[in-house]
Image 1 (cartoon, rainbow, N blue to C red):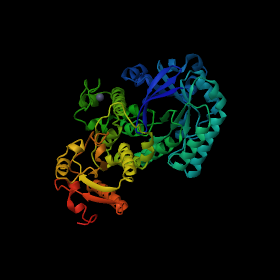
Image 2 (cartoon, rainbow, N blue to C red):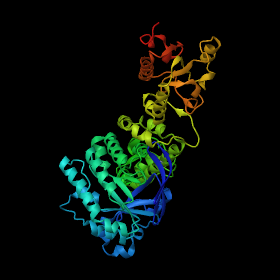
Image 3 (cartoon, rainbow, N blue to C red):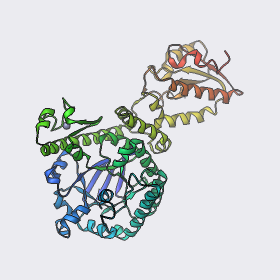
Image 4 (cartoon, rainbow, N blue to C red):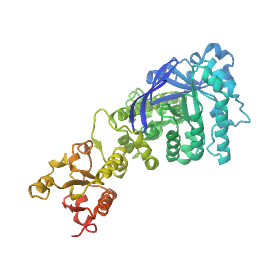
Length: 509
Ligand SMILES: [Zn+2]
């Protein structure tokens, strides 16, 4: 097995990917290295010292510049990098210059990648252009699959980890077809989804969420999935949550050449900054003014180092959140940085039933879950728990008492209202007590010690939508139980979710 999954949260995972030059811990980012210009920008050893043990470079450019010599030199010598090297077949050049000007023979470039010593190699796919018509997109799907089958002998006989790209672009039914057919071709160790850079510019993050979620829900779970060009730290948490394992991008240097400074919350023009909100080796040495005064090429080089630090830091933050089971909280937090990310999170919520099936039932340490607003309502754990409770409630007969939960008094049986109801005889041995509380809706009180009913934090003020979800659930319970149960609702005007008027249409006064 070349990919071992070591931890999971939502649809994301921490994995260990085996290549012939060693292991990579995923989620991992592959900085794009230009084999010709690289030394004048960020040298490979610098990239490694920042924390990247893997890079991606372009076999097509190497072939054009170095030709047969590269076979003796090897790709690692050419780019001067001793870690894991992934090579692309020139799909980007195809996208940029068109197939009339660029000719790439699939079998030839596959052989070439093996000969120059790539660890991970992408077959010569036909990427779907962002402005493709449906027919053109379909053609790129079929042609990539044809090429995947054409090179299959090469793929099976080499010790390279081969990547099969999924095409279809913004047409999700084509993405689904591409993923379905790709899964049937044995021999590929990895899949890739592309090319989000242009999609991102044109359609925003939501479309990428659709593409990735659709492809991921079809592709085999035991293989890693790469995202081409997903290079901004903004997009990384959301993509990891959907199960993307590796990323690559040249954005760190492209942005730097343009004087753009990345942060986890967005990008700034360096000329607009008075302070550098970062403590990396660059930001602790320079002021924005000093950076602006540098010669342009020198400035690009230095800004690129900062940008790489930001990407690396965000990956570490994502891995920490994933390990703690807090990936959902991180993507909620990141969704605040830009409305389009918030929109992308809404799109992700469409796929939350699929995510819930992949989300691990138990994490090592049961941490408290933080509930912020309506978005938190869609957390996979809550979906799972509400489903479970619904099935338990089906069995309930007789006397049912509903009383308000107080998030500050946990477990629920410690709450004042519970104790008062008990001492006044409202609750007896025969009664089933259900706690009602937004986010959870209904919780049988005897489960009050079960995770997460005693391990959560929520604000006491909340959007009315959350209270509506709860009253809908209560009204459903009442309509199902009219004939077989006697239901009493206790209210407490102290809590927004327990005002009498919320229930006046539900019960006989
Ligand atoms: Zn910095």
